[in-house]
Image 1 (cartoon, one colour):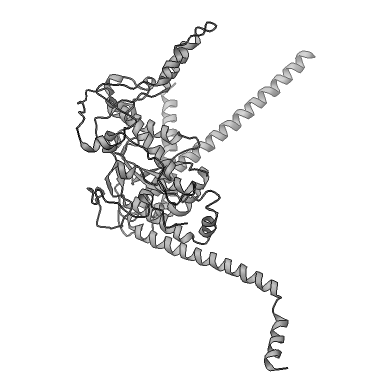
Image 2: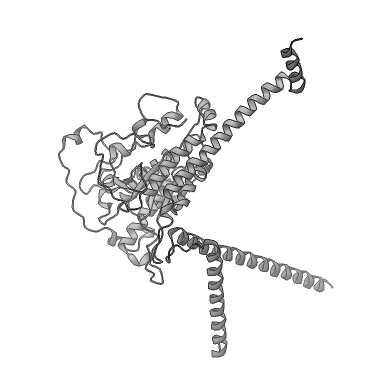
Length: 390
Length: 93
């Protein structure tokens, strides 16, 4: 027997059997991959937190509140609200907390719940402007009012972004129901008529949902169905008519606010890997949480920096549409339809720039359109371009 | 109500409010303030922490009061029922 055979015999007697070796090798590989991924994720999150921590260490006077952000959450396609909250807690909350950015959730389990809450916010603002005594505190404290659009509206996921835009559009174009208005004449102030400008671009654009002319109110179609009266119960149809009139909102250009209201919106796109075709991507994402953390982190840092640019309907209404396309498992092809807002509403909005470099000396948030007309490629995945995650 | 009882009630209320204020400031100061004292002004993080601490304190206070009230009401109702049962037994006799 050679020395090599003797050595091999010694080693074989001490190490486990072949199946055990295979098992230990595979489990060791998986465990080490997960461990490496977690360590890298912690480093990445620490780097992002260090970038943003100077915001928390700046002094603030006692008569002002820290900056606050309203985070809209609506259940995305194929998943539940809980998953959104888990992702928010894991990847975005540490950065908001490190930057001392206060946040409040606008969430709902019902489809359209977020939209109705935002419509109510807009209506409250209109009422407050018309009658400031409605929401005044009993003691006059020199503090920013809670009900106003000083807070930014951040949507998490395409579904919440769409509901947010719908809510803003419908809120601007409608009035609060009569029950909630003390004096409706205060809100219906005289406004200048908006004349349509004959541009060539307008001819090529598709017709929007709201085709308005001067002093033309669109009424809800449901009213037409209530004209039929049943002979058995003559009293009940009238009550039903009244309830439906109060329930449905009427949209009109006349209800657009004439005071200064510029909501600032933003989007953090959600990594929605749902469906049979995305199973592989989902498995790979378990070992690549560091890349997911980086992507979410960049978007959160952009929200913290908060530089806002004018809202462009063609570019910004399409944000996050690739999320929907991915769920349907199509890599290429036409994007789903984008939501069309009224031009006057889109003109008043501003959107947070989706990349941001935290700078102690740069305190100005307003930016005047540095990339007008250009396609932008970034973490948000504009115009159907996918994120760099799985 | 007499003036004396009114004064006593007002004094009691004043003491309660000052006691509450003292407790809140002590607790929230312990939890929120950075002991390094780099600046004299409160930082954004500290002021946000204080806001949340005060809101939480009042919420907890309110929850505890509500539960105590509910417990005392349940006890009162139990006593009333026991009294009613005793009266019914006496009437039968």
